[in-house]
Image (tube, rainbow, N blue to C red):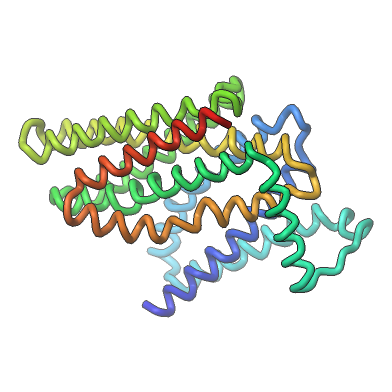
Length: 303
């Protein structure tokens, strides 16, 4: 178990560097009026890879084993890093900059000061925290609990999570054609998010009290998961687009790095607390999550 923890930690650590690097490169590679389309296409590729990658890795695991699968992951990350370095090569050669620990701390401090003077970015950070501390427990705690507690087949969990990804892809396609959410209407998706949580609470209550059958509950959760997938893209794409379009080029990497820290720092605590609360009383968890999302509505409408 400890070995798996170390491997997973290294993968997540490398993935964070890749995400920040890719996000920064999009600022250089995309036209300013095309950030929404660029982020939408990137979301489509990421989510499609999540589905295809899961299928491919399952086949590879079955036929080539765990060791070769892990080796392929390492090779994939090396190729990704090599591609990003190739894209940045000319920029680095033309503007060389020595980096040491003190310089890194200085850049983090400059990023913090920049964010401190931007009320829109601060509120965006707050809504990101609210979104992550409610969405991650939904995917990682609530759905597995419902499958386990109600003795459903584990395939149901896979279907629900696949539907979430599919909903995110559909929404991303929509954002390529239509700029539905600007930063001025950013709070709209939080209202839909709250509706999904309320519908889920009603469905769980009805199912656990025998008022609806298992098939209807599973189908209802499919619709809710589809909505959750749409909501994920409705948050990520406008949020990333606003950072790309409104943050100075030399500050994008620092702001996004701090954004990742802020939005994900509360996730482990949220998962631990939600795991305990769901085991004690799932409805208390759903009520508290709904209240937190309502706070997100208030914050996001003020951006």
